[in-house]
Amino acid sequence: MTAVMDLVLCAKPAAAHWGKNALVSFEANQVNVHINSEGAARLQDIQKAGRKLDAQGLKHLSFIGDSWDLEACWAFYQGYYNAKQDNKLELVVLSDADLKRFDALKAAADWTRETINLGPAKIFPQSLCESAANFLSGLSPEHVSYEIISGEDLLEQGWVGTYQVGKGSTQAPAMLQLDFNPSGDANEPVAVALVGKGITFDSGGYSLKPSDGMSIMKSDMGGAATVTGGLGLAIANGLNKRVRLYLCCAENMVSGDAYKLGDVIRYKNDVTVEVLNTDAEGRLVLADGLIAACEQKPKVIIDAATLTGAAKMALGRDYNAVFGFDDDLVHQALQAAKAEFEKAWPLPLEPFHKGQIGSNFADIANISSGEGMAGASTAAAFLAHFVENAEENWLHFDLSGSYQKSGNALWATGAKGHGIRTISRLLTELS
Image (cartoon, rainbow, N blue to C red; front, side):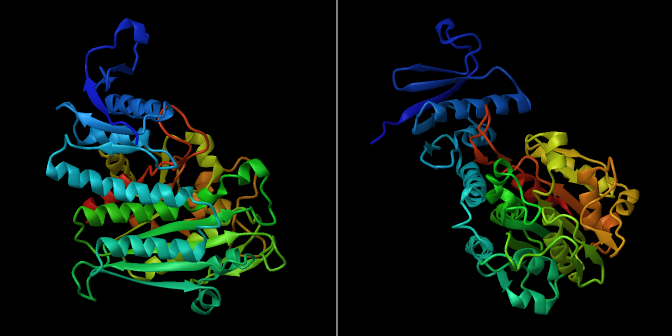
């Protein structure tokens, strides 16, 4: 049995023999975390301490002292978490109310991170839909209803993008359509619709990825996991608005049945799309979810996806990218991220971007073929073709910061859950 060590947060610097500006020091059965910074920098330093102590193999810690508040405890846990989930924290320092909030955060973040970290043998389109539905139903069974549409039923109901991307796999593509309706009134308006990209494994299709790029493609369902985790957190914190959730799930594989370059897909809203790259598949499945969301006439639509390498090139893996035509809505998303100590940054989206994905054989293509086009912006512009009122009621998150390919000073290798707090706050604040 692993011994429990006390974890103390203190403002005084560590003794000189621990090294200059040492974050942690030890005495007897106690670990000292030395923090002199304030605000967001303070929380970041606490998270770094959590990462250090996990790396040193300390498996059982107990918060001690009155310097620990909810955000400090959460920052430490973010760094202390690892994909094996073999660490244990005792939170005796928090009030009952703060402990309830911490537990809600932990449940949502753990589900999100664990789900993304699972390999494609465990998380495939049907199992992802079922896991998300079970997670949310467990939080509010009387207010959650859902349907999972899979295989040929997708084609029959007009969800052609998800079907085409997923038809090359032995794992059938699937779409989760979930309704959280705390009013119980079937006529209650939908306040927000959430749409998530759920590509449970992405080989690139016939536009095949190299092995290094393909090795982390179990994480390509990070958008679906993030919007689910965000909704779960909001429900646990007492969300009282009707929210619809759409997860568009498929494996993008190579086979004789797989979709091909040159195919033209006609969507339910009559927009036709020429496939110029089968590795630009996320936008093809999201289009179905956006169309389905629009059918419910929500006040706001939010989608999230690990959509482009261009966003990662621009922002690295620290920030999630935010797109929208409505500057006020984008600003609200940025403020929500800041209030929740998450990182988000706006990238440009203008009406002219919609004209940069033209096709000689369809209304649009799934990538821009011209030189020097903004890959993340044109991907967002593609999605705008499937939102009825994109100029006013739509936000798109390109989740550059949802997964860490290799560990660093703040995060373990793997999923981060970065973005669920932003989504949760938006669900609460948007009218």
